[in-house]
Image (cartoon, rainbow, N blue to C red; front, side, top):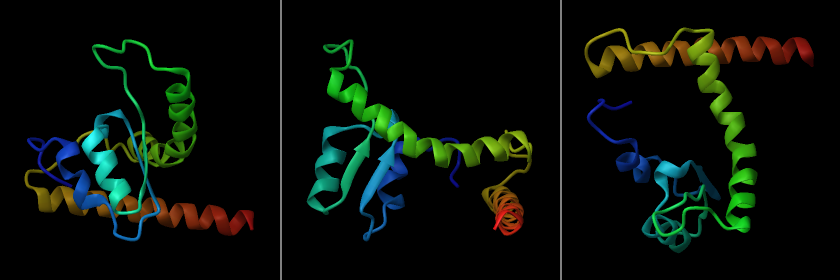
Length: 123
């Protein structure tokens, strides 16, 4: 968690683990430098492509690439949707990073407990 002043792409390098096999990210993280840096570290850059000023429409292979990445990212984004919809975590409710970080951790803990119960009942 960071303050609202920090653009999320600035923190991207801190989020990448050394033993990661691949990094899946949306278009906000897209840059040639980031892709090259990931490849040098032996990490597959699964970052979605975006159209640019001189390329208004993506080539077919990039559209297919984005669609495949979207299938993996959808599973992760679903968790954020559940936090927003069921746990009403649309905005932070406190002043200060520490309190808001604690609230997020508690909501994630509650999500994991509920998910574990669901998996136990299904299995």
